[in-house]
Length: 151
Image (cartoon, rainbow, N blue to C red; front, side, top):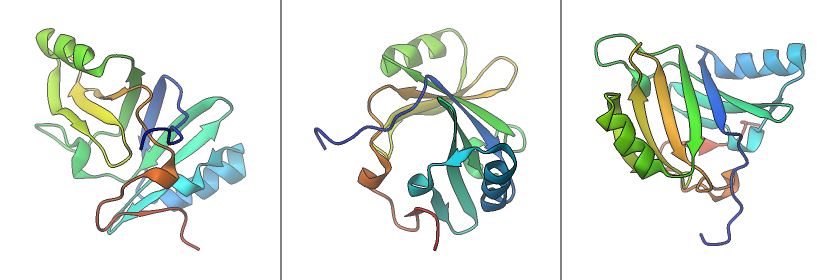
Protein backbone atom coordinates (compact mmCIF):
# COMPACT_ATOMS: atom_id res chain seq x y z
CA UNK A 1 0.00 0.00 0.00
CA UNK A 2 3.02 2.23 -0.22
CA UNK A 3 2.16 5.37 -2.10
CA UNK A 4 -1.59 4.89 -1.67
CA UNK A 5 -3.62 8.07 -1.04
CA UNK A 6 -4.16 8.84 2.63
CA UNK A 7 -7.35 9.78 4.47
CA UNK A 8 -7.57 13.55 4.96
CA UNK A 9 -8.49 14.33 8.57
CA UNK A 10 -8.01 17.16 11.06
CA UNK A 11 -6.38 16.52 14.44
CA UNK A 12 -9.66 15.85 16.24
CA UNK A 13 -12.70 13.99 14.86
CA UNK A 14 -15.75 13.84 17.18
CA UNK A 15 -18.25 11.02 16.81
CA UNK A 16 -21.97 11.25 17.47
CA UNK A 17 -24.33 8.32 17.99
CA UNK A 18 -27.63 8.14 16.07
CA UNK A 19 -30.12 5.26 15.95
CA UNK A 20 -30.67 5.94 12.21
CA UNK A 21 -27.42 7.16 10.63
CA UNK A 22 -28.73 7.51 7.02
CA UNK A 23 -31.61 9.67 8.28
CA UNK A 24 -29.17 11.80 10.34
CA UNK A 25 -26.90 12.24 7.30
CA UNK A 26 -29.82 13.35 5.13
CA UNK A 27 -31.00 15.79 7.79
CA UNK A 28 -27.52 17.26 8.41
CA UNK A 29 -26.97 17.72 4.66
CA UNK A 30 -30.41 19.25 4.05
CA UNK A 31 -30.68 21.45 7.14
CA UNK A 32 -27.08 22.44 7.90
CA UNK A 33 -25.47 22.00 4.47
CA UNK A 34 -22.86 19.53 5.74
CA UNK A 35 -21.38 17.10 3.19
CA UNK A 36 -21.04 13.36 3.64
CA UNK A 37 -17.93 11.51 2.50
CA UNK A 38 -20.34 9.09 0.84
CA UNK A 39 -17.62 6.83 -0.57
CA UNK A 40 -16.52 6.05 2.98
CA UNK A 41 -19.90 5.13 4.54
CA UNK A 42 -19.70 1.72 6.22
CA UNK A 43 -22.69 -0.54 6.75
CA UNK A 44 -23.11 -3.91 8.39
CA UNK A 45 -26.11 -5.88 9.57
CA UNK A 46 -27.75 -3.63 12.17
CA UNK A 47 -25.24 -0.79 11.96
CA UNK A 48 -23.76 2.11 10.03
CA UNK A 49 -20.94 4.67 10.25
CA UNK A 50 -20.62 7.83 8.16
CA UNK A 51 -18.31 10.86 8.05
CA UNK A 52 -19.49 14.44 7.59
CA UNK A 53 -17.41 17.41 6.46
CA UNK A 54 -18.00 20.90 7.83
CA UNK A 55 -15.64 23.43 6.30
CA UNK A 56 -12.19 22.09 7.22
CA UNK A 57 -13.66 19.95 10.02
CA UNK A 58 -14.75 16.34 10.11
CA UNK A 59 -16.96 14.29 12.43
CA UNK A 60 -18.44 10.82 12.30
CA UNK A 61 -21.89 9.40 12.96
CA UNK A 62 -22.41 5.84 14.12
CA UNK A 63 -25.13 3.58 15.39
CA UNK A 64 -24.95 2.49 19.03
CA UNK A 65 -22.85 -0.62 19.42
CA UNK A 66 -20.62 -2.81 21.49
CA UNK A 67 -17.40 -1.15 20.25
CA UNK A 68 -17.69 1.61 22.78
CA UNK A 69 -19.54 -0.06 25.63
CA UNK A 70 -18.19 1.29 28.90
CA UNK A 71 -16.80 -1.37 31.23
CA UNK A 72 -19.78 -0.96 33.57
CA UNK A 73 -22.53 0.63 31.56
CA UNK A 74 -24.28 1.42 28.30
CA UNK A 75 -22.57 2.45 25.05
CA UNK A 76 -21.22 5.98 25.04
CA UNK A 77 -23.08 8.78 23.28
CA UNK A 78 -19.97 10.40 21.84
CA UNK A 79 -16.34 9.57 21.11
CA UNK A 80 -13.49 12.03 20.59
CA UNK A 81 -11.03 10.86 17.93
CA UNK A 82 -7.63 12.53 18.05
CA UNK A 83 -4.72 12.08 15.63
CA UNK A 84 -1.20 12.04 17.11
CA UNK A 85 2.30 11.72 15.65
CA UNK A 86 3.48 8.89 17.98
CA UNK A 87 0.69 6.46 18.85
CA UNK A 88 2.85 4.03 20.80
CA UNK A 89 4.37 6.79 22.93
CA UNK A 90 0.96 8.35 23.51
CA UNK A 91 -0.45 4.95 24.53
CA UNK A 92 2.41 4.29 26.96
CA UNK A 93 1.93 7.68 28.60
CA UNK A 94 -1.86 7.32 28.83
CA UNK A 95 -1.55 3.88 30.43
CA UNK A 96 1.15 5.04 32.87
CA UNK A 97 -0.92 8.08 33.87
CA UNK A 98 -4.03 6.07 34.66
CA UNK A 99 -6.27 6.15 31.58
CA UNK A 100 -8.66 3.20 31.47
CA UNK A 101 -7.56 1.31 28.38
CA UNK A 102 -10.57 -0.08 26.50
CA UNK A 103 -8.61 -1.40 23.51
CA UNK A 104 -4.86 -1.91 23.14
CA UNK A 105 -3.16 -0.50 20.01
CA UNK A 106 -4.41 -2.31 16.91
CA UNK A 107 -4.23 -2.01 13.14
CA UNK A 108 -7.52 -1.42 11.33
CA UNK A 109 -8.86 -2.41 7.91
CA UNK A 110 -8.61 1.28 6.90
CA UNK A 111 -4.80 1.17 7.27
CA UNK A 112 -4.85 3.12 10.52
CA UNK A 113 -3.55 2.22 13.96
CA UNK A 114 -5.60 3.16 17.04
CA UNK A 115 -6.15 2.58 20.72
CA UNK A 116 -9.22 3.40 22.80
CA UNK A 117 -9.38 4.71 26.35
CA UNK A 118 -11.67 6.33 28.89
CA UNK A 119 -10.59 9.46 30.73
CA UNK A 120 -11.06 10.04 34.47
CA UNK A 121 -14.64 11.21 33.85
CA UNK A 122 -15.59 8.21 31.72
CA UNK A 123 -15.44 10.03 28.36
CA UNK A 124 -14.46 7.88 25.38
CA UNK A 125 -11.33 8.65 23.35
CA UNK A 126 -10.01 7.00 20.19
CA UNK A 127 -6.37 7.89 19.55
CA UNK A 128 -5.14 7.37 16.01
CA UNK A 129 -1.70 7.43 14.38
CA UNK A 130 -1.42 10.37 11.96
CA UNK A 131 -0.65 9.61 8.30
CA UNK A 132 -1.69 5.95 8.36
CA UNK A 133 -5.39 6.02 7.37
CA UNK A 134 -5.85 5.14 3.69
CA UNK A 135 -8.31 6.73 1.29
CA UNK A 136 -11.67 4.93 1.46
CA UNK A 137 -11.25 3.16 -1.89
CA UNK A 138 -8.13 1.39 -0.53
CA UNK A 139 -9.72 -0.03 2.66
CA UNK A 140 -9.45 -3.83 3.08
CA UNK A 141 -12.98 -4.44 4.36
CA UNK A 142 -13.70 -7.47 6.53
CA UNK A 143 -16.57 -9.81 5.57
CA UNK A 144 -20.03 -8.38 6.28
CA UNK A 145 -18.94 -4.74 5.97
CA UNK A 146 -19.73 -2.70 2.85
CA UNK A 147 -18.54 0.75 1.79
CA UNK A 148 -20.41 3.60 0.12
CA UNK A 149 -23.97 4.86 0.10
CA UNK A 150 -26.41 2.17 -1.13
CA UNK A 151 -27.94 3.06 -4.49
